[in-house]
Structures are given as C-alpha cells and as structure tokens.
Amino acid sequence: MQKGQVANHQSALDESSYIRPGSLAPVVVHNTPVGNVGLAICYDLRFPELATSLRYQGDANVLAYPSAFTLLTGQAGHWHTLLRARAIETQSYVVAAAQDAVHSPKFSTYGHSLVVDPWGQIIAECKQSGPGIVMARINHDREDAGIPRDLDLPATNFTSYVRRILPVSTSRRFDLYPQVGAGQPIPIGTEDFRFGMIKLSSSQIFYRTAVSMAFVNISPLVPGHVLVTPIAVVERFNSLPDGTICDMYMTVKRVSEKLLEHFQADSLTISIQDGKNAGQSVPHVHIHVLPRKAGDFGRNDDIYDALAAHDKVANRKYRSPEEMAAESLVFRKFFYDDHGQPLH
Image 1 (tube, rainbow, N blue to C red):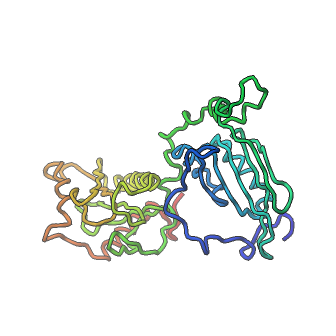
Image 2 (cartoon, rainbow, N blue to C red):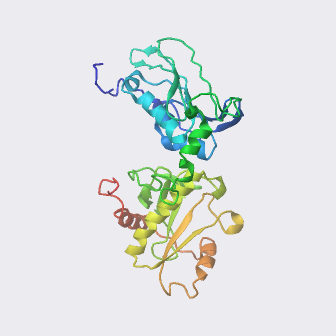
Image 3 (cartoon, helix red, strand yellow):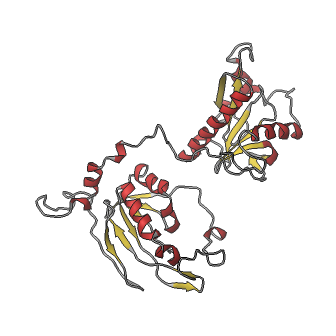
C-alpha cells in the first residue's frame, strides 16, 4: 500500500462481519489496586460517549483499551490522538496495551502500547517493535499515594488535581444535550420487525432510529394515534437501557411535532402502560402518542379509559394493512425523501 493510500474493501478489517454487537454497556470494575477501571476495547476508543459514560455513570478514573489497532490508522495518528482525547475529556488515566505484529498479508497491527495521564500526557510508551513491557505510576491523589505535598512532582499526574482545576463535571449541559444524536432518523429501510409477538411490516413504520421506531396503529383512538417502541423486544420499561429511553422520548418529540402540525391539533396525550395491571397487553414497551383537539372525547380524561380498554373490547375496529401503509407513507414524507433517506 502506497503512502497516503486509504484502505480498500480488500485490505480493511471488517470485524462486524464476524463479531456480533453486545446489548449491554461496558462495565467499570471498582476498587482495583489502580482505581475504578472502565473496560473497553480497540474500536471503542473512537466513541467519546462510551468513555464519558464510563466516567460519569460508572465513576471510572482509569480507562483500559486493549487493542489490535491497524498499522494504517496508527501511522495516520489516530492511535495517539484518540487515546489522548479520551484521557483529556474524561480526566482519567488511559491504559492501552496494543498488539504489534504482521497477522496476515492484509493485516498488521500498530503496537505502541502506552499510558496517558488525566492531563493528556503520554507518561509511558512502548516504541520498539515486538514484545515489550511498559510501566507507569498511577496516582489519583497525592495523599492516597503517600507522597508528601512538598515533593516537587507534576501536579497534573493526579486525577483529583486535574478534576479540581478543570471542573467539567459540573459544567456539562444535560439540559441541551442529554444524549447527542438521540432520536436522529436513519434510512427507513425495508426490514420487518417484531412488536412483541406481532410481525410488524416495514410498510407500517414511518420513522426509525438506530434503536427506536414509530409506526401507525391498527386501531387508533384519534386521528394520528401512533406508537413508539424500541426495536429490541423488551417487555418492561425498567429493563430498558438509559440510552434507549432517551432515544425513544426524543423520537416521540420529533414525531409528535409533525403530527400536531398535520392534524392541526393543539395538545398531546403521551402514555405508556407498563405491566399487566397497567393495561399492557403486548409484551413490548411502547409509548402511545395521540394528537388531541377540543371535544375529541366527552370528558378529557376518558382517553385513559379508552386506552385501557381499546384492545380488549369485543367490537374493536381494525384497519387493513393497505390503510395502515397509506397513512404510514403520508407520515414518512415528514421525515424522509422518496428514496427513504432522512431529510436534512
């Protein structure tokens, strides 16, 4: 491969072709001899939200990234830049053991095992090729390390000091970006999904994110009554990951804005029935979104009785698949172009 040439599909490493993504976030192992260690691997270091979660949700002060980083991206500077960025943004030590070898004619790893301190400085690195050992001292607080305060050491090596002089943890704007990218649409696709035990045709889905979807209702209580659900079949609300909950409700917000405008409604009922005694009949978490107008129910709160009973009444009216697909197509145009790509 010539210098500056980008890997093509023959030489690129495609781990997703043989590794299945997990369903749980990486964990933090607490109270180890070096601190609270957040566990991640090679490709994970490209995702700042993962590192941020390990620090702020898991209370990590050390992040571990054992890796088989490609020679191509390592030589381009990605390895050092990304690891230093993860250390700086989380104000944590980063420990990254890295393979260094020619694994096949198409795949070589970069090596350069290293340790970065919370100030973003590389304090240990294995620069030679082949097997090696690097060692670094990890200190989160001078007193805990038994180091006298009058000893002339760089204060930036200490986690507690860095986090005190740059208090980013108290400056984060959760009100503006609770989770960046939550609720953002992806191409609508042609895949069918499951809604509990029910097969959900792609023609009935009008909005889709990486983890959530919105679809039309087979038996709506008011015009525009739709459902938002996670793509994964999860029965109870408290079993959902925090990120999925955020994504679902951001999807509700985006979808409801368009439904209000389309149906010239001025109010919304947003409801979730969680568990059998709450009226849940499909074992898959779902949120009802109903545009509301004056007089659509005799008494405003009758909507809740109707929601509890509408899938249990003997004379329930069902729409045909063609009716549902036609309505879904109308709603899709609020979010997608004719090729199923998200509108910008």
